[in-house]
Image 1 (cartoon, rainbow, N blue to C red):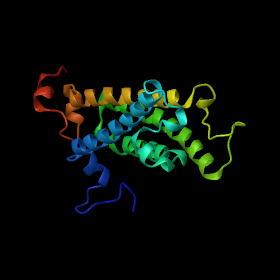
Image 2 (cartoon, rainbow, N blue to C red):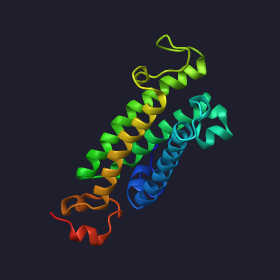
Image 3 (cartoon, rainbow, N blue to C red):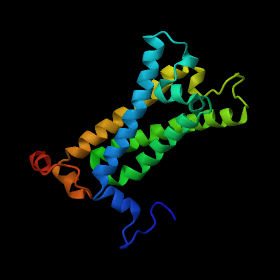
Length: 192
């Protein structure tokens, strides 16, 4: 059954998700995003504050379960969850917010391709670009830790802008919204 398949009562799952449950789904999605940020910031702290070598600086989950990091399952799983989440929640965004949300989706699509390359290399043991470890395209010019911080930032910023605009729509956008994410007071106070 597809994601957009009919649910009981004739409502598609994406309508249900982007309508009455959009705020809950968005909050849950942001918890996943912030947990991932916490992992990367922990890794950065391990490297630049504690002075750990990069292979030992694996964040919190990577310390408990090193195979998640070395096998690329954790990174690829997160990239896929992000891509699916951005896609599934997009219909709840309208107007200016939708544009920013789609920018985040587009960047995450490429980020996902980069993680797919890493995942395939880790699973097959065949490394690209003449390297001895899994390597992504942009990793040819930026170190991996810095690259991941960059990717997470350039996906996160348009998401935050989209959410702010979504929660404070103008009158025209408020009329197009299928969810109740925006407080009534903000909708009434916003400009046309």
